[in-house]
Image (cartoon, rainbow, N blue to C red; front, side, top):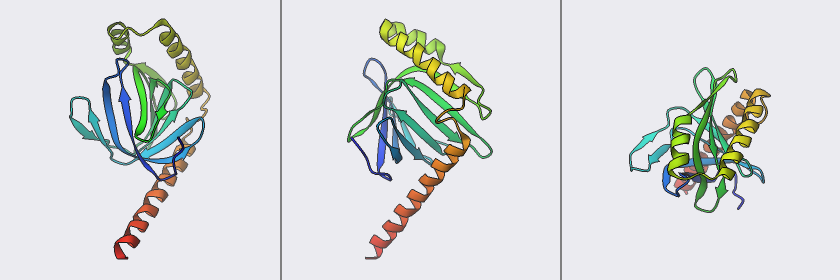
Length: 187
């Protein structure tokens, strides 16, 4: 399914046992192709599986890969850009949402591209509880190496100028949508 730039979409994160984990309510599509979809937001509502919700503090640009087992969130802070990477199934995109299975392991990437793997304990616990197959564990190990290589070599999307450019595109899209809304209100 192909979307138009500027369309809004939600993101749904699931766990391996098919239970809904988290929903991001309002993301704007800023790029969509055969390999990935890129979305951005400012202060979007996030709803947890237990119904609790919160709002993101910083703006972000997120990359959902259609053929890789991870997604990448670039978090735009006042003086720096950091990244949060989820080891996850390739994104499934339908007319309802961007959907993926979260496999717990995450990489936190600082603005200087140093990183650390987090949530290893959660991965081990869920691997046993939800019975991750050897095949999935091997895929995740291989994809973690691929992701680490991207970070080490500052390959797409690990580039601060790219993130600023995409975020500026998001701001432009949002401003155009506001102008269109104003025109329709005055008609």
